[in-house]
Length: 345
Image (cartoon, rainbow, N blue to C red):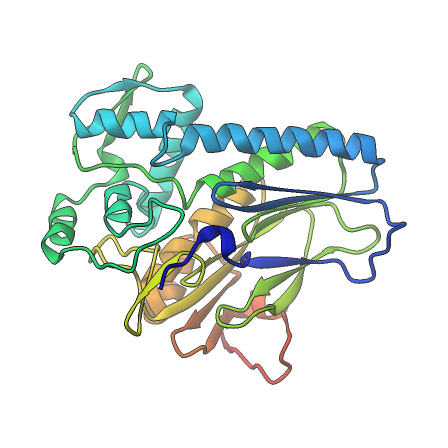
């Protein structure tokens, strides 16, 4: 079974209950970062809203072009230099991104590890369509033994070098969140007071939707439509990591793009993890911090959440059982009123 990223449902759904054509809501969509992106701006005239949204879309394309892991980009050029044992001059922006991603990787004890781009490629996920083929076990073991880490990267006087030739940086678990924060900064600078930015289910809210908060939905990992909805407050972001967006099947086994760097194999036993973040880095955190929880599985996700300083999180295990922190559970409204999550402190 081959899954195309362009045909997949977005992780979370933006819900506008009671919208009418007279409502001052401007929306613009695009396709960047391998997924659908949508900008919703409330309360501005169309000309102003269109200009602000266009600036954000331009920024998304710039970041896409800079951070692409396998097409020509600044990031892929750096990876090529690492593979040759060479250094490369990089932009101050990319240097800051790498340093931030390294700190998050260290905080997660390596479970968030953008340095394993080589493993991601080996599994066939550096493509828009995924072939249902398992890599050779010896090749997987070779990558695990090489143990590429973000901490292998050094940046001195603007030049990046890796002490480990196996380091191949893939920022697929960071870039969307970074783009959310950049978009929020652009819109706030433009004077936009109410907006919702959605990049493939990573969603950040500015202000509200008129006199009410922005209401968003969390995609059900095995059915069409929303599993639950919640209201996002100003400056909050929500992010989901799931096994249903980028994956392929071999027999009855599902192999998703979320790879456990300890084993070299795609994580199994978890359908989805959703987290709620807030603050000036809400976007980045909504993207990066969900990965350690997903890879920790149903037995270790809560400890991983504490490690990443997350109080609002939810995990859906392989059987479809829902586990949620008390804080997030209070804010969720499940589509099926018979759903009763296991609530943890």
